[in-house]
Length: 235
Image 1 (cartoon, rainbow, N blue to C red):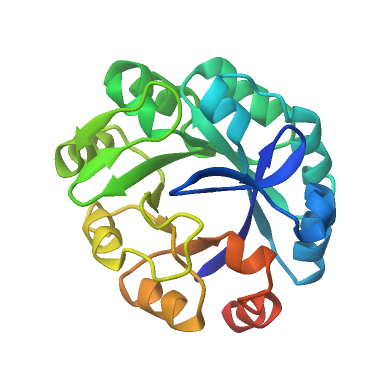
Image 2 (image 1 turned 45 degrees about the horizontal axis):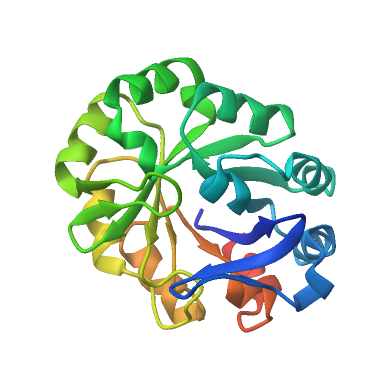
């Protein structure tokens, strides 16, 4: 089953968007993340993707209470935000996340990543922020890594799933990076896609490329994509 997962980005306890121009507040739902989560739950979402931008850019998990509140709404929570350490993974799981996205910056330390996969593997998704044939993370201490080489050692480390984010398309509505998704799908693990997704055709293209699901942020929050219809179609 192809999973459509609506997304919420948090900064200082409010909804936000992170796009090519940087961080900007979101006015939808009066900036209330829990209200957005309830709307997603009412639309039939089984998962909600939650990103703590304060953790990603400042190294401080300032939104754990909100993540817990979102987890209490009903759908399972997949949480991230530049996660790099066992402590950060543990804090998000303790807050109620069912699984955690390991940030791309963590991939600069393969030994540490392999330890996390060994201890938390079933509840980890490895984030791969892609620009062309490179992994280019955002947030604190960004990395620039060769995509296919990195995928090679990750696959050998028994990664359960990947989240491929087209960094130049995040918060945009143009189109996802289907070719990047195809490259990562060849690693033989479930792949979720993010960035640029706003229409039914985009979801169809990603499904055709072999993706297991799609993370939809701005288009779901602003009602550009009919989330209820897409979730019903995929169920």
